Length: 324
Image 1: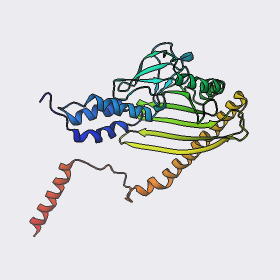
Image 2: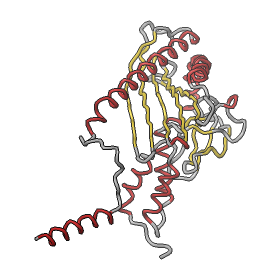
Image 3: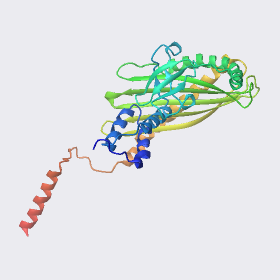
């Protein structure tokens, strides 16, 4: 039945399957989805959109194909940086650290190329440049502090574990040209041990809107998320998400501002990790035990072969018939 028509009623379900793929298992979920619709084929635009949504949602980390990134930094895929439609095989993104563009093949989860974007001379671009010039000292200071933080906090542990960590930041104009600026900072990390059948991601996203030199402290809001997956003889997902609010008093000196921002990020990430560990401990002690059925422990392996149990029933039935 080559060329069988795809059932469009399955589109929503399949997109949910793909978008909710566990960390590191997008290719596996795609393969199973293709098996579900066989002999039909998955529409390319459905695959592209769903994979892009999954990768943006989980802050996919990709390696640049050349030395295009700054000092070999890894690139973070995020919706804020997208510079084109999701419905294409290679979606362009803007790298917040270098202002270059890079293309991502979301199905393969790879960066295919990286290039410099052309500067525009129109009025809107000139207005944007005003805000960029104001934000630039703060961005540069933050890049330095974030690099030190990520390098120290998410160091490669080696061994059988495989993973990566990176960061990025974007600036955008505020409510008034030449006035306030908005900064978005992202920290992303992933780690997996295929032989141990586990994988996980850690992400935090931070936004702050301020006017350089303002007297009031700067408000900073953040969203932290931890996702893990364990697949030995089962399919266990654990996801935890929390929102955070903090403030930064320094708004004049970019270097001091960056130090305070990263200190706040470190403090909130530490708090999130500690509360996550406490929640995991409580799950082990109470919730998971409550889900188990209360059964006697005989230390005897249960024979799952249906034929054995059918035979026992037949023998018992024959015994009753013979004894009556």
